[in-house]
Picture (cartoon, one colour):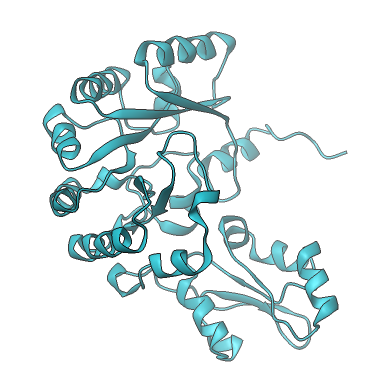
Length: 313
């Protein structure tokens, strides 16, 4: 808000919009946060922002919330989610124009790296996960394998220095036939790539990806306690994840494992179980987060209904 207000002070005619998960779930509260915020693009905002930039009248733009001439907050009808993801332009031209990629590091990826999306949405129902519940939805909407492979070939030409490409889809392996087809098309390019995956792939699939250039999976293990996993609707059994991890070790695929502490029914004992579980899995690297009940998620509603939030003084 302070940045928006500073921009308005310099050039009052500037139109400022907010996007993202928080603004999508709380458009009224976002607009009320500062008079310098002119509009909010809810949910999937690509074409909403494009239409604002083109100068279309705000009342005509789906997916938009804004303040009218009388200062009243108006919420236009919802915008339909994009079904044909191939209509979106490739991102790597913008990366080439605007980014010095060598300045960006992430501990578990080779440097320099590039991150991009091949689809949006996730069929999993995890109660804590922000993006499917606020923007992307629970249907995995994807770009075609031909489209993805085309951009990757182009990216290799634009960025010969890149050591690793990371597909940041919530669950790249959710559509396995498609993931296999992409891997098949990437193999001749000689790229090193990595992706997010659930801990439910068999050895043959993992080995196929490895032979096609895969180096690393980012895997959300979350907890070493089955009751906690069931409560957050993770849809994974501890033993299933153990088998997957063992297969990755055998195939030579590296894992960056993510864990969450403080989920419902967490105790000192279950935290200790998660620590022991992480040690047993023996993955390359881990990150540990504290459970965060973001507005718009099922976990947020659970926290609100159970009075878990600290009372405001």
